[in-house]
Length: 475
Ligand code: ACO
Ligand code: ZN
Image (cartoon, rainbow, N blue to C red; front, side):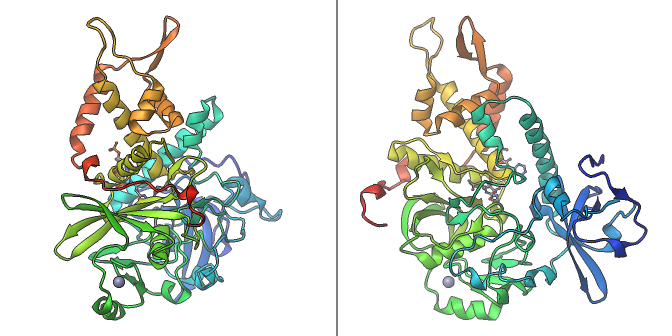
């Protein structure tokens, strides 16, 4: 693999790992792969006489960060951090500068409250190989594309979709689904929870989440899959389960078809559930920090039903009132259910709600890499579905539809419709006007993609009336 090091020029042959410090960059063997991508040392610790290094792979998503031993480090070409006040890391990635955490009231017990989590071990083998390879390659490819696009001219609507990739710190804390965007910090940069058990699943977290200090040192946090309360041990969880009457999320059941059910939870009425959901979600959502005020949000939790109860598959949060037309704040499919079409189902549901509201909507920015992929795929399929169903008015006429009509039919916001048409390369300028051309290849790809979308949202099964939150004095 070619390693690009144009930003720092002070590479040195380093004959001993003992001179390695935080901020050093060097090729590191990525677990589960044969690759040695460039990585930055975020933290160093000694565990029972063994030195471990927490590394971030520079061109990859943070979920691949891991603890590695000396044998994984290629010390032949090390780039040491510059001595001029640590600006090197900022110049390189902008992620190492310690900044204030934006954790709301009640976060005192969180892992952010001190350096404790730095010295906590985390398994070096992070994720199954398939996921590592898939995500790593994908993240790198996406990153390269973004970099290319940023250099060249591009339309604003497209840029706004591309902005999300994590290297771009957002200008200020943005509230989102009871999370706010945060600046990276050496503590929050590192995964602090080794494992969670949720119902029948054991899941390895991807990112930091401010669980209380006494929880993060454990090998596993045991979470009640129905009320989302967390416990220190399986025994404690069993005691909890004996008392916990819930077999589904709290709130109103607003949709059911087959074994799929959606519950609507008011962040003000079910505060404890909403906060625990955000805490759990933070383990898999980067670029957002937990925010404890869940009052302004609704949470739509999707479950699958069996004889043991309604098991959480994923959720999205939504502001009760959004001045920016956001119809989703945060969205998550629990990892055991990912890549099976549930993400698209959540997105479809969010647009169905917008249709009921008679509005267009868009997900809150920034989007994550996987968020962007999923939305792009959903937008493309939805727009192609509309385009292929438009009928010509007269016999010899070509089918006609305006962009506004596409927005009305799908509830997808105009800029997202336009960026999708551009991404699909469908817009052509012909004899003084814009026309959309669908070639055979696009149609074939679309048909085969739609055949894979077996589960769909059926609007007839949605029993919901939107509330006008603006009219209420208080949520
Ligand atoms: N690698 C490559 N492609 C992927 C991956 C992956 N790891 N994950 C999803 N995709 C693609 C799928 O191939 C599919 O596209 P296709 O149908 O054109 O092939 C599309 O993304 C959606 O796949 P689904 O199976 O429907 O989505 P999934 O259930 O995996 O959920 C989601 C997608 C919600 C983004 C999930 O990856 C997730 O929870 N990620 C962590 C949290 C996150 O990043 N959320 C979005 C943040 S942005 C925001 O909150 C507004
Ligand atoms: Zn419970």
